[in-house]
Figure 1 (cartoon, rainbow, N blue to C red):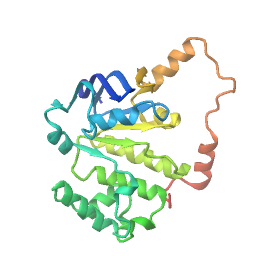
Figure 2 (figure 1 turned 90 degrees about the vertical axis):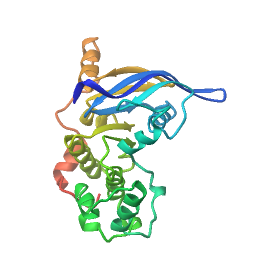
Figure 3 (figure 1 turned 135 degrees about the horizontal axis):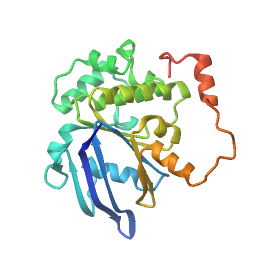
Length: 255
């Protein structure tokens, strides 16, 4: 993570829908090569904020730059350097994974080797499988592979592990960490605080369209503890999910 360079800069972002003020003057930076988390309940403004940065939704006011490019003037160039995870409805269920990869590479106008892309997300064994035949975890891994097609500088993952079993979640965490190691900046939204704690270098808590806290998970937790907070239940060195993973093995399985 390069703390000296903000690859995304958001200043005083406002988004109104008629009378509803969805985003109320949010400001934050995302540093180059970090995993940055936007956390908060549904309706807090997380997804709206992401979609504006991704140039998919227009803002009401404020300034946003992505790798030095303005969302107002350089939307086309921004789209070329980012990867956005599509929802499952965006896929043709009867095409196999190689065919889908070829389709998406054509849409992006880039030349890729489908099997190499599938290997990145450990789906090479499913190359000839149709999308609709995949498990939930495999579908999520495939959707992340599609974000990497244009070799982006930044990828955006919106609730990537919702609905997955513990094994599939852990596998996806490993994948996201590997993507960051390759030099890609990752922006993620999640409901799961354990996920944010494991993955994110820094997190922003969004509530009612405003950022109410922004720091590293460690600093946020330490500050709470230093304020005199104590958990009612003793904190153990492992949790029930760790037990399940340990008993069943963490190797790539059907998840």
